[in-house]
Amino acid sequence: MAATALGLWMMVLTPVIIVLPQRVGEMAPGDKASVLSVVLGLGALAALVCNPVIGWLSDRTTSRWGMRRPWLLGTALAAAVGLALIGLATNPATLVVGWCVTAGAANGLMAVLFALLPDHVPPQRRGLVSGVLGMAQAIAALIGVIVAGSAPLPIALCVLGGFAVLGAIWLVLCVPDRRSAKGDRPSFSLRDLAQTFWVNPVHHPNFGWAWLNRFLIFMSIASIVNYQLYYLVDTVGVTEGQATRLIQIVTGIQTVVIFAGSYFAGWLSDRLGRRRNFVFVSALIAAVGLLSLVLFRNEAGFVVAMALVALGQGMYFAVDLALVTEVLPDSAKAAGKDLGVFNLANQLPQSIAPAIAPLFIAIGGGHDYTLLYLVGTAYAVLGAFAILRVRGVR
Image (cartoon, rainbow, N blue to C red):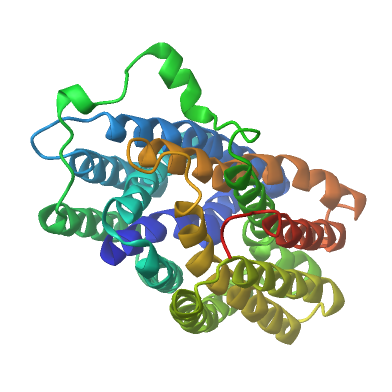
């Protein structure tokens, strides 16, 4: 699972952190923020559809290969094709197509991969396994940035896609996948498909509060990750080359911080049998990091701020996923679908945040990110308090 998660996050994070901003800057230098928002927003829309739908389909798959295996491999292959399109794109339209294919397929892979957690991991071990998956995310960001900066872009993206496919193949060969008999398969209808995007928060309030918490945290993350290259160039005042190198350094620091924070928080959460407090504290730490970007507009401040954000992220991802698996409405028959709905909280911010970010940036004159990062701080604080509303999980 960790190997597949590593490939998955390499395909998702590398374009967002460095590749898409660079490519958009080459194609539309005079309107880069707006064009990037369109590219990211449409990709997030594709992810929004594919994540729960592919999770729903995997719940209903009765192939002799199992429920999850066909989707694990198929989505990894499709995402790799999308990455290749990004590398070969010569105009924004092709870039949009490539990113939509990548984001949609990778998020389908995410839904199926996360469904393996309630399928195979007992509750008392999910914090540790979630921590390992969080560590994979940190390592993926570092590897992706290094590969993208060390080889011609089309080759680099093919390498990242190939790694993801190999990870999926390894998991397919190793996982003792569930096999659902046709008689046990949940119903398969257009009405059921429409309900794929919905879990009633009134009937399942714990799931609803956990979803809101994830949505707000990802609104906060999207406020910083998508625009950090432009922040360094326009606000801190470094060149694009210096900004790229600084992002590589910061990504390395974040890898170490997230690695340590994910493992320790996941392990300690299992030992103490507590989830909510870890999620609450981690969200506040990330909020402090975002606020630091507003207060300290220099290279050193950027490094410290991003390290704090990384610590909050590492702790958060290690424990939040474990918490959610304990409040799923139906983990036996609809884990893929429900985790797909939960992952919408990851994807909606990637459409909403880029859509509204230019408004906050425009208030600052088009080159000031102060208001954007203040709003991102507020999202993180609200997310921290939302998790305290979850009941039945300590």
